[in-house]
Each structure stands twice: as structure tokens, then as C-alpha cells.
Picture 1: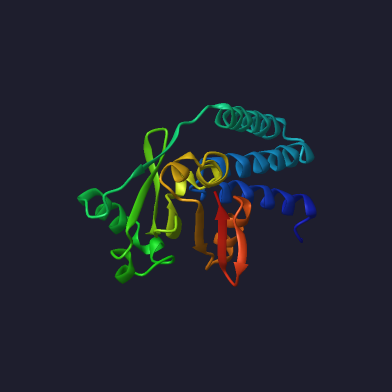
Picture 2 (picture 1 turned 90 degrees about the vertical axis):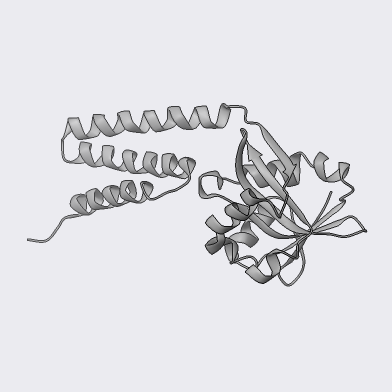
Length: 204
């Protein structure tokens, strides 16, 4: 006897819930889990299992509650200078080197003359590392954010809505390379413009 479409629907709902638990971003986890719960609730109604349906409706509302709080909680953002020869900075690079090396090689890391910590609610959420020249151009070689903060908020805040730090420090243009598809999508989303193949610029 083959599996009917209702059973396949149940497997799909289970898969979506399972995928949600693999998300490192709490926002992605909540949204995908919300979708999975709605699917599971529908599955519960289809098989006439009210406990399954009602439990998943309840979990869906819990996800919405936490998402509402996330989107409506005022967060604090700050850029501060990073001493690129400090013990902590080197530790941060070492811990995250596997992903940072997708943007820059180890050999080129030390040649960068400007490093910044990106703070979110007083937590170090990522780093910017690159070269600032005398003409006020900051070529960003590393724009790295740790997994739990990858929701575009940092980039949107620093590069689009609040560029005071750069202006105050004589930076009027940002440049970077979009080497990966996901990184190019991120750059487009926060207002960078592609001027040459994989070269992106944003005027401050």
C-alpha cells in the first residue's frame, strides 16, 4: 500500500521543523519553525488529530510572539577601533579563520591597516578589516559577522542608515569585492553598487 498525499504532507511538515533546528540565526529558526508548525497544524486537522493541530498552532503563536519582540526591541549598535595586533583580535581571527579565509588569505590579513569591531547590544558581532587610503576610501577586505547575527541588521545600520562613523573619520567611499553569490546579494541589499565585475562601491 503506497503512501497517500496526506502522509507526504506530514513528512514535509516534519522536514521543515527539522530544518528550522539547524539554523544558527534565531530569526531564521523562528520563521522556519513557524512555517513548519503551520504545516503540522494543517496536517493535524487533516488526520483529525486535534492535540497535534492545537499544539502546533500554540507553538506557531509562540514563535510569532518572540519574532514580534525581536523586531520591536530597540538594539544598540556601535563601531569601535580594533587593535589588529591585540591578543583578543588575533583570537577572534583564529576562532573564525575557516570562514574569514573565504574573504582573504592569512598572508594578507596582517597587511590591512584598519580594523573595526561591530558591536550589537555591547556584544562583538563581527569585524571589518581593510585598507584606508589618504583619499578617504576604505577598501573592506573582511566583513565578517558571527552566525547568530547574520540578519542584515549590522550591514543595514552601519552602511546605510548610520554612516556617521565613516564621515567622522574622513571616509567618503567604501569599496569591497563580492566573491560569493551570497555576499553579492548582501551587498546589493545594503546599498552597494557593482561598478566592475565583482567590485562594489558605496558612497557615504
